[in-house]
Length: 308
Image (cartoon, rainbow, N blue to C red):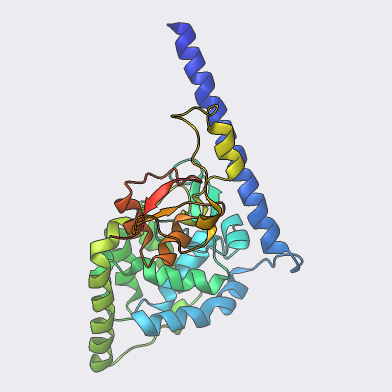
């Protein structure tokens, strides 16, 4: 019995080490891409960080009503004024994780659990805009009824809605806002402007509600990377027999829109759930649901239903 437990523990440790090594290789590639042809990534002071990102924070405030002071304070707090590893290499200033609808790459970092997967953005402005999208859901909806220069109630409301577990989170934001006078970037709005803004934002929040669980629940691997290479499939397949041989992919099926029996597609090398879903005008979630797919991804030679 003890030997079995020991073997089990060794197996768990081995697979954990393999997964960690894979994530490290992924991160090194992201880091190389971030520095390629750009030289050294700049470091920020808090003041230079504010100067760099105040304009996009104001843009997002005017579009959705999130005080620019709140957005800047969250960016300062969560990215170490843009100097965290996640901000430098993944352009992720708010710690937004990968979900099933994410179309980009992922960067792995320990957070709520070991090797959590975070979104990689093309630039920091994308991160700021995605932060607004992240807040446009039912749990934060009451905040959008506040005035867009009401930073104190926004700070307390974020904590109350479950944005952060730290009981001092509102105080941390308010202290930053007042220390650096970030409230000077906030702007009032007329009653008519507020009503128009609320109408637009609540329309978008309501549209998000049916998909919230899928849209905001973190996943361990970006959908765009959920594909097993041909060499990996060959290694895993047992010696060919009449019943176990891997299906051969006919040359005719290598075209991107070939459908078998009017409703199926055969996965080929380089395919991902995302590019297949777009090819057949589906969402990743619809493709997964139609084929009862789990998070481990797809395999070359696998037949997927692509027509409802």
